[in-house]
Length: 243
Length: 245
Image (cartoon, rainbow over all chains, first blue to last red; front, side, top):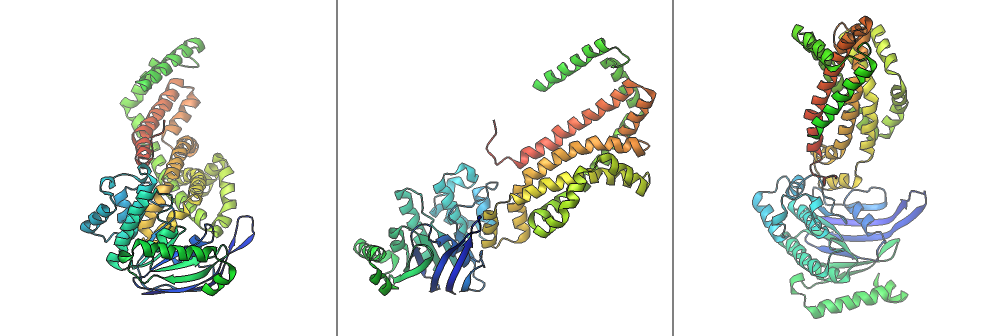
């Protein structure tokens, strides 16, 4: 179970016919059970990159070898639930093999018990995001892609969800790619943090965090965050040294 | 209750108009009711309504299924749209009368010719509506189905069909009214029974009570089918939507 990525460039043609470079140099490999977090400025091409990893976009220069036969779970930037199916049916449709015990456990962890029979239109954005998470985990993925799953949620809820994600990822040792622009999320969730440049995105730095997620102290987290902040804001020579 | 009131106002207006225009032009409700009862007693009313309904049902099902399939294909596949579009425009604008007359000339005065002609008239509107519906499908949800490897048929049923449902309902609604209108012309021109045939007979004999008796029985059947079948179906499809005012 291994993801190997070497994208040399990706162009995007907008509605007016203008060409834009979105990705310039994305090259890394990720093994089973590893959580890779991409941190970059908004609009740098993170979502485009994830679409390529998910196999939704094949129009790029380079090579992506996705783990063969791996079950994929994904949380898109928007919840992307079917408005005409209940919360439970939305999850079951993606994960027809999930048994009742498994689903109950998942709904309990994500605090969705009370909302099983609601339609997505009746949910707040925070709840809808949790349903999207439940759907991604219900398929028992080998490969999980999370596109800013915590964006636009209030701090308390984001922190709780972050813990729940960490718990689910550790519980099954899933190869995970997570995109965020929140350095705090990145440091608390990732085994490796990839720093991305502004558009066209390339990887500026690949920072491993050897301490297991649960064992990271606040001091260590603060130190890594300071390091990342320094690299993001640092001068040119530091950036080149890092990449 | 508002429906009953609406109906009462209709009958009252009719009665007053018949008093003003005279029995020869617009018979009063009792005369029409009497004609209706005579026809019902002889069994002709039900036979003719039945024949018309059977034609409507067959032509409707034929046009809806074929039209939906073609519309979906044209919405999904650009080449299909390129090939089909000129034909679609031709069929959309071809007068119903031309189709019916040509069908009778080519296929004889047969049941198959009548049903085909009615279906061909309704087909293009179903195609256009479904094509628009297919173009409006949410690509984000398609991607979701791809990512989660939802099998094609399940994705079609749970992701695509619910999005098409309002378009299918709209095509059914407008198509059904089109079929109601055209079936009588087809019967008038080339069938030996049905409401259209009877109205043709009544027209030639200038038997206005008979003409109205058939017209109104037909309208009543349309109303019953719309309220008891079409509307509940629409309501069921849209139950997940927030209630409109």
